[in-house]
Image (cartoon, rainbow, N blue to C red; front, side):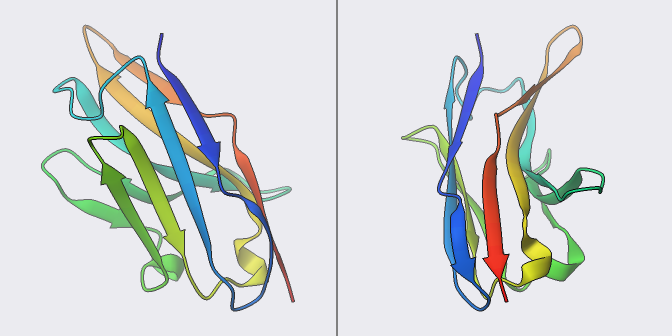
Amino acid sequence: QVQLVESGGGLVRAGGSLRLSCAASGIALTDPTTRSMGWYRQAPGKQRELVAAFRPGGTIDYLYPVKDRFTISRDNAKNTMALQMNDLTPEDTAVYYCKIEVQLNQLLVYWGQGTQVTVSA
């Protein structure tokens, strides 16, 4: 069974940094059936949105407001994915989720439980 566990959220002042981590179990991030993986966020009253993701073919997508401040990375040996967030603003306050899509006979989507990031002014 695939499980994703996020960690690293917390409360930080504007301009600060946080590093989120997502530990995957039940599947290797290097498994050829892993179609894409990434980070999403959902602020109160808003829809969940893509923050950063590894796409098929090796490309990386970033949400435009974070592209020069956030960096997505992966450690295949540890089977983890990370999101380094710098120069945080109150607008970055949200619950952050990691997500993996696995392509078998059908597309399977797995989410972590989320980690809260709160940025104070």
